[in-house]
Image 1: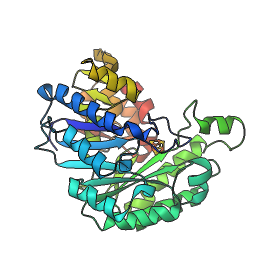
Image 2: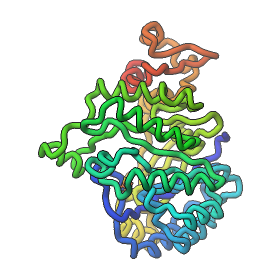
Image 3: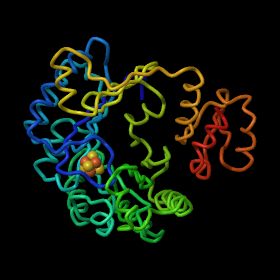
Image 4: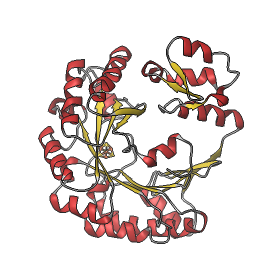
Length: 365
Ligand code: SF4
């Protein structure tokens, strides 16, 4: 992996909104042509200052909703940017959008990683809690279609559902591993304030999600269940077969630069970070009038940069150079209690350490 920047494209379209989701999305698919036109404007404006890029990540929203015309339009819109060095192209897909022609189209477009949002293999969580538009059966069908293509298959799972127990989560992990993906992401369900899921829990229509203790046990069994199948945890929520880590996401965690295009997309140039407005219409109108479509720009001071570096470093199995943490009084204590290890001049979190990574970062920054 190099220090070249990554390129993120936010495709904001979803057929409907999953009740737990707080990403920016809209269902107005009639806006796709306007979106593609605005994306081309934004790419043209950024081209003189950015590139070449090493990675391209097409996320959302639901990029798999784009038909052939939409996807071709998206790549044509990116033509002003230098993609000649791109070594990894990720596309996010929902299982209900996967068909043999779509899977072929993604391969022909150059996708190298297909991130499939299966979330669970239990219809109880898929329908009642997550409100997803696909069943467990569709997860299997989609994975089988995608495995016939040359790209890496990456499965996204969510644990910690209301009423879910360890046995059920363990079964989900094994079902995912049985599909032999190259990469598995496992996220603890976060109940974001203001979402329909938060309201259902507040109104007692659903029980609360897993307790912190249960979520910690679920986290720990993820590695136990998957390490014997050839996966290792390289980031708190991400496990991969060696050599199949997400290069693009590693740029975020290693604090390398990335450019985000599309409504709500975030960017970081090594000093400043900014985000686009979370409105497709406002974003497109601003670009059409020659303005920027930013919601905010910020530059962190020295202490905030240090805290961010420690926080991000402790999310990764590779950890941080020991020299960076030299002189921090609590370091030895975390090593003694088995939360951190010293190895090859680096401080690395253990499984126990991953569970308290943010707390440790506050003490070590
Ligand atoms: S498909 Fe993904 S981005 Fe769209 S609403 Fe559901 S979770 Fe959010």
